[in-house]
Image (cartoon, rainbow, N blue to C red; front, side):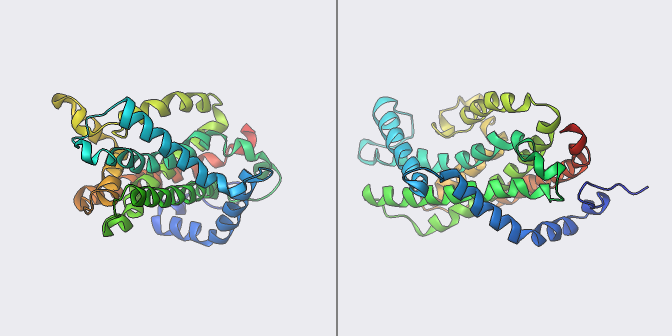
Length: 281
């Protein structure tokens, strides 16, 4: 007997990555429409509207500038003359992590919060993580523009390699997709997942060298941050945006391949679990 998802799609053909890619590509117009609707709904009714997506990173940059430049002086290996680089380093690392955190924090409620899509209509539920990811990517790009403005204010000209920073985020985008698919599926059956993620995300944040340089970790433990795929993304984001250096292409390729494999596995897990969503909800 052939296994069928609620949407009528056989599960087994999705073991072919090409079939999976084509399936998602055919949904691109719906993904775009839902992303625009999701962004509009987020700011609907607020006085400043989408302007909040610009004000929030500006306020965050201001706070990090004060706290980590004047209160907590992390060992970044820069002299007083280049002290203005510290908040820029922090913010460059914070942008991709915030993108990851924004999507993962709501992942357990993606399907549960759209129960009508499961029960009443035939809807490709597998695009919901992509919609949230694209919304977070828009906010990340706005934050990148704020970073450019901050560099110009600090009299630091953005290097040509700044254009590579969005490319440096690619492994993290794939990792976010992987984690979101898994959490979205688990959230249907285990409602405690949402509370657990709220506890885990701060640990992930402080285990990633964002508010401190990797060199600040004791020598015998410096291998630990590099076991975290997000750490490589943060490092590449800083190299390209602040230091004018290229990507570590070998590590970037390995990280992209690893996270891409996880994303594919997460998609398959979601599609396999999808068949039971109707009964669980």
